[in-house]
Image 1 (cartoon, rainbow, N blue to C red):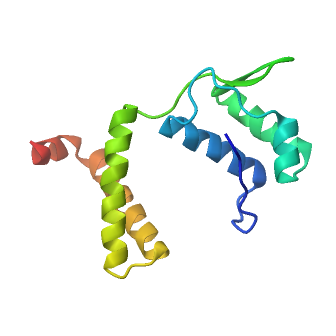
Image 2: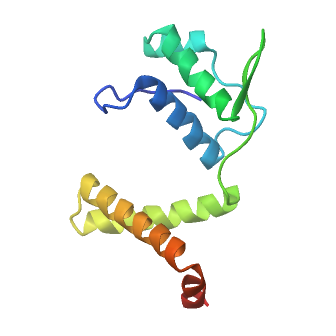
Length: 139
């Protein structure tokens, strides 16, 4: 796994690292047993303070996602996400098709992100408010 930083995002550096690990866990890029780069490797690659990398790893450990093994490194303890990797791949293909259609319709990246965030929020709100009704709609 390679970390990257968006220094203009306004998100704390350690949180960016935590989010990237969680994202990789949800997408199956990281699986239980995988070793994360050492904090020293992260510090050298990103030119960040060693305490920042250690803070990110401590946060992941506190959440039970990774475990530090002294002298060996930090390893993924558990995965995230509820669907299979095959289902992720199918959904990703469908989403890519939709995003390309949105771009062809003239939407820019921020437009697409706003639409997706709105749809995700609406779908999860609907499920929380009336799960039985949503199941009826699908059937």
